[in-house]
Amino acid sequence: MIETPTRVMFDSNLNTKFKVRHEVYGDVDLELIDVTCTPNASSDYEGFSLTFIDATNRPLPQQTYAMEHGEMGKFDLFIVPVKSDARGRYYQAIFNRLVPQN
Image (cartoon, rainbow, N blue to C red; front, side, top):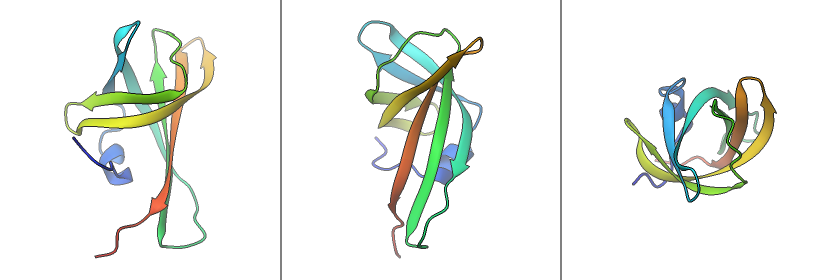
C-alpha cells in the first residue's frame, strides 16, 4: 500500500481509472481527469488537487475511500463531491503537505 501518493504519480496516471470500494455500489470506477498544482507560499510545501469523474452518476458521500490503481497500487484517499452534470459526478481531493527533504 502507498503511504503518500505524490503529484508526479497522479500526473503520470491522468485519464486513467481508479477503483473505489463502496459498501452499497461495490466497485466504482473513477477517472482522474485533472491534476492541478496550487501555489504555495513556501517551497517547503507541495499543494495540488485532483478531479475525478464517475460517468455512472452514483452519489458517493464525502469520506475516505480505499482506492486501487493498476500502476499506483492501493491507498486511502479522502474525496469530496463537487458537482454533477450530464457527464457524471465529479469528486475532488486536495493535498497540501510538507515536501520531504533529502
